[in-house]
Image (cartoon, rainbow, N blue to C red; front, top):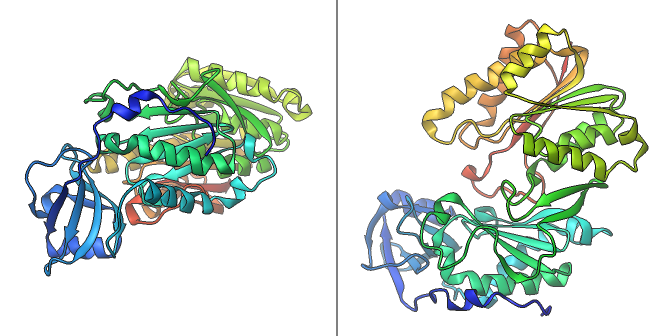
Length: 423
């Protein structure tokens, strides 16, 4: 096991209870459990042992009192049990955690075995989709970032981190592990831990430089959004880079500049990066500088603009600005099911504004990260809106999740994007 000291605070977290909660669920919920769905909702539980704490192991039994699954109990969440293991009984201990993390890394062999593996950024554990609900682990070069979405993980955190350091550290040397807490978790009892804490090893700087598609980027692993970078759009960014040669590019919702840098390195004549946040656009400029040794990046005229997407696109239209490639990658518009119709209207409006800025024969790239918006509805909204703006689209390709963001249950799918030619 790599010599990576673990923060002593992890050893004084509440220990996992030796008690197992016995759970019975509705017939419909049991069917989902047997189909290996990772969630048991509170309203589907018909009986449960009294007095469970966050992180207790809960065993789901069928009508004959036979084992069906085991998971983590979360009394504060509508998803009351986050299932870890289905089928035959299993002991959830450090060896089980190691095996689960090993399976996750096996799925990411193209990253783990790459010649430049020690410099890459990729997702190591994708929550439910890797059998570890509510837990995300991302790697940026030699730093691992663990993001916790449920307080049920605190009693198991020390064992999980040690297993992670051992297994992931054998694949790529690890110098530090950073803890990130979801907002709902950070608002509760965190046992002295805080978002951004270094919980194993060391971190010489908050900003870690990693590589993606041969390009260098910075990830603020302690304070940045998500775990420091939007790893899920890697394949789409590289696709934009392969499309941008000789074009003027508009990168809306540019954030820290992933699409911008790939477009510049791919030979874009110019890139205008737009975002509502000045600090994130400053990171875009820094990421361009990290790649300034590339002649294509040097030759690309780069401009940033702070502003609301709808207002900026309207203004660009009034200025008669046109672009050969427009990228629309907004944040999630549907945090709740009740937001879905509004989200589809927002996607349609973005499409109408965007296609008016695309030169004839140019390309529109538009994405959605709203899990509650079905892919079919998203693509229909985009194509209908473009047709309504008298710029009907010719589909080039549709994309989904990259290999380090596997989808193993229906609700796990959220990312969808399309590339269209605009006649």
